Length: 340
Image (cartoon, rainbow, N blue to C red; front, side, top):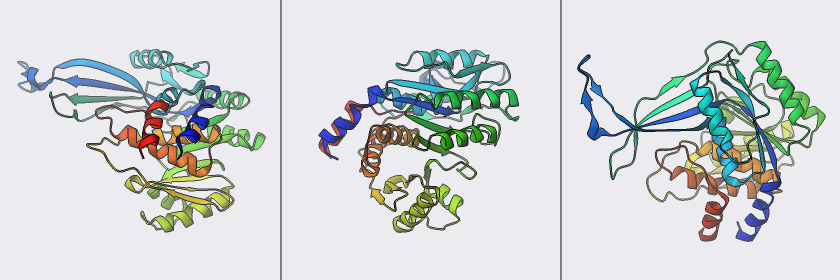
């Protein structure tokens, strides 16, 4: 990618308005000093002493963090948190970020706040080591009242935003934000405005989603289409094109160290290689940075290939950030564009 073209695309970011519909969680990091380890008098077990606690929005919030770093003008989270301490922390963290509007984010006593608690062993001179994570999730179906509220807010927002990102992070269907009822609201939104950019990603795969722009990995593409291609780039290209033409929407398939395949409904297809690794890596958050950059770049007028190139640059920056769920800013991407 030419630097001047990236600057032209990213110069439009401050004027963009992007909504994120999905599961916002609290990423809470507990930094442990191994030199302060003790033995509990009561249990005889080792005690890990936490010397620092830091929190940030996670899951769909990781996409939001990337949009903030890209300088997107207005960002509208659509989701919920509980009326609990983690919910307070999540809302405070969201409000502290530039451009974030919480008008459509719901605080409710009907759910608990989705939380990833990540203990990190912090040894001087070494990369952080993550210990067993402690997660807090909702295990019962999302109440119908809450589903209805989310659906109505999605439909209101589609009238004012340039793009909508859907991020389904929960493991058990119907327990998070993106339920069947919410997908019906998104279907209505797409039917009302076929030109609106809607890009979806789901850890359980995108089967049953309305025809929107889809971002997935190779395994999810296989599960959705029934094709068996592994990471064979040519086979992925063929399958992605068929899906794009069938849905009449763009398709993006991430291939880890082999990059990304992008297909358009017109039959166009691109393969953009990943950048070489430049040291120790941590892949947490890489996929979310791809989603955020694809949405911003496409809304900013990028072509299929340009959006894919920008997404690969951003993910390369993110994977080299250790012990955190990273982000990539416009200056960081521009610096990498200038040297690759």
